[in-house]
Length: 74
Image (cartoon, rainbow, N blue to C red; front, top):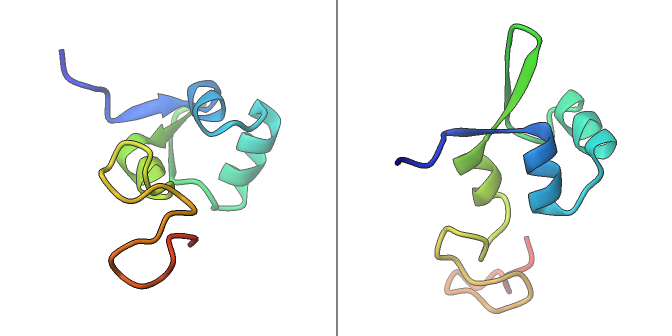
């Protein structure tokens, strides 16, 4: 079975270590990549993971030097 392209706000909150309320606030401010379908708010999985280097996308973990010279903290 394929990995879903989106996740719920609750799932995203648990994944990134925020409360659901803080996650909804971040979505409202445009800080998290989300789509609204009817009354549902869905977080775009690939874009969320790309925001956190080292999560699931093969980049250096936060705090570790990366090859781009940025020091890993973005």
